[in-house]
Image 1 (tube, one colour):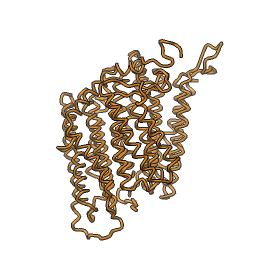
Image 2: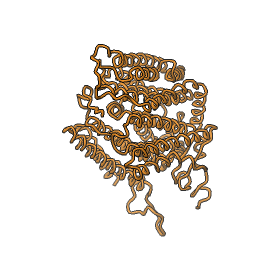
Image 3: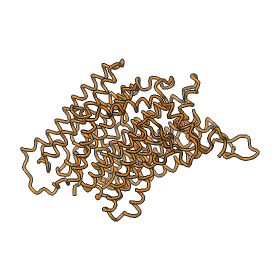
Image 4: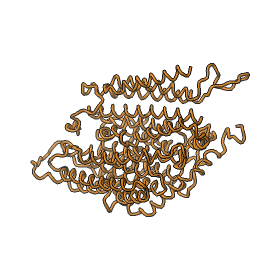
Length: 118
Length: 513
């Protein structure tokens, strides 16, 4: 169980990092999504792995799982989902505007100033 | 329990949706409410700073839940000082963005501005690490909107970089929080502080990893080498007033480092021993060098301003990395100074941008109102490079003085002094090309790009400069206050006992509601 979760986190993180280093918006966003999945599982595991135990006090139950990481994961999922939506929109805007989906600094950024002043 | 301590978070949180819902089509009304809100924030922040100035720690339990279970808002000298700094900065930057009509070049500027303020204030006031993460996200998501305000291809592209880098930073923050929770079982800063002391010396691997991860997250925010790469292009491409407001964002990282590494991992703790002097100091020094090299090498004025932020954060981090009483006081003094100086610089760069074809450091016709703009640039450059008589010089002197007794004194002194010289050369080169080498060019009459800046724009910049001058004049009392702040930081007992021992729902002693 521990090995399974740990290797899943490791696999997700490493493939996420690999994709983040690809420097095109689509793979980078996919990589960030994988990283956020990895961190969600990691947060979940930070309260110790317990199978089949309730998180809330009940009668006649002796073992419980930690409820706090579940709440943290919920917050993290919502935030990362929202942020991913934002970055997809901005990346689409940048791609449609310049017909180029690279995420590194354009070589010409130092030379060209496209600042439009009304 | 006073309710005022949460007002800096609540006020923008109410004002921003109000501006979106009730005033979305009326820029005039938006401006009035926005300015009134920021003035209200200054009033509240001044009151809070006054209350905290006697060394007391203010606590607010959200929903009345006691500390380890509920989220707490804590105001001590440092928090209230940063809140006051943010609100004063916000007023002048807001005046400039109204004066320069930046808020009219895209939608929802004022609403995003207040959401951003809400996030920054919350990050300064919270006493809970996960809540700190949430407020980081609030300020980041507002900053994404502000960063790409009014669009443009290069700006959108820089915005993508900025958002992606910060998403990676947030993921790293979550990893750090997960490992801290796994090691201590709590996320309340005061509670973690107590439990870290109890960790057995043979089982510190996990908490060490967590401490380093947390430091990495904060130096991403503070843009310290080698994690500063997101800063130059985002700050250079962001709208001028937004970049000026972002001057406080790097300080959020510095604040978080000071807070976490005095309360949770105090300098005498064995677990994190050597983390600052062995690891943070070299990177801070390199950061300063990279910053001034960028200032010297910049081919555009906005990049120059952005690299000067990297350099000033390097300076702040050098002071922080000693973690002594005098060095933290010096760092706090320099943080306030460099926030105002950097904001003024970005606003002046924006002034130059409005009346020049581009910001490249080439010979071009003079900017409109050249004498006044050049004079302001001169003052801001003096402040930024740390020449006398302005507070940059005082701050640098305090940092050098704090470094005098340490074993790395030779390195620190030589790097800071040489870096100062290089940055003076960089600034004077840029200033003389932009403002003086204008005689040989053809004088273009009635150029469409030339709009004379409004009085309100100058009021925004002049206000920042005036604050810098006042800050310099009252350096003595202010430095004493910074020392008192540092003393409070190095005695976290009161902070911890206030947070954990104030009664509330689920208090341990009563075991009930």
